Amino acid sequence: MVYELDGRAPVGRTVPAILAEELDGAVARLRDDADRTRGVHEARRHLKKARSALRLVRGALDHGVLGREQERLRQAARRLSATRDAQVAVATLDRLAGPRGAAGAPRAGPRPGRGGARRPGRARRRRGGGAGRRGGRRRGRRAGGRDGLRHEYRRGRAAAGEVEAAQEPDAEQLHAWRRRVKDLWYHLRLLSPAWPWVLEDTAEQAHDLSELLGDDHDLANLRALLAGRDDAAPLLAAVDAHRADLQAAARRLGDRLYAEPPGDFAARMGAYYRAWRTECGGSP
Image (cartoon, rainbow, N blue to C red; front, side, top):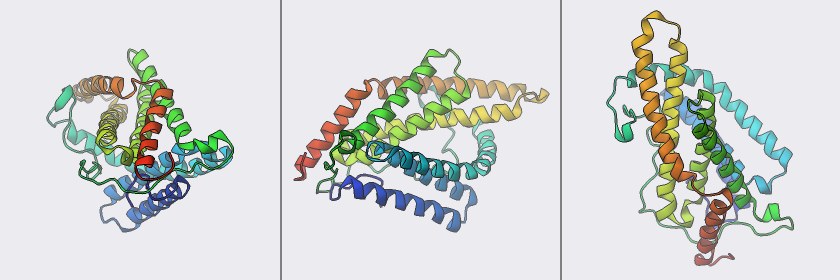
């Protein structure tokens, strides 16, 4: 199943189907993947996608249900984190010796388990039919997707502002921003059929920002492991230089992705979605 809203079905049916697909995918990767490193990475990715899909429709869900299900997914992901962290530390050391890429940021090949994460190009056809349920009396239930978009974009913009305000942001501030950027990437992917030529490119930029911040997080973890070792000074200097490049590139890209006020961003996405619905013959 493609990770995007289906114009032929209401959001109320599409999102649960997406959740089921992602959870099944996580179990399958842990059970069947011969490469344990890749299996853990892909399982965690499936769980993150499921959590982001839930956040998109937060306005249509009971708050208690949303919190409970998010916590279950969070705990499942945490059980895989220790294994993932050990794998990443080794891979990050290898990448330190790699070439430096565009925007002054070190890009020594794919991050562990990253292969296959890129979206296909614009050649995909938009699917017909309508999506999005407009029933229900409460505004929150009618505009659950738009409310979720505005809320999560606001969180990402606030996290970007904290990083920008700090001359030397700490690892937790940067990692918190990355979590919000991941949500933006996944939400744009879900919405991409509404206007693929615009939203797929924007989703790719959000993915690139997530990768920059992810590389920085890996280096921060490596630095913590090496701190205090007398023989690690040259390596720590290389880590710090790489992190400075990554953070500078992330700030530049973040300035563009989070340029809009949250209400304007949600309204724009809603306008694209309604136009798509009308084009597909559904109710706007």
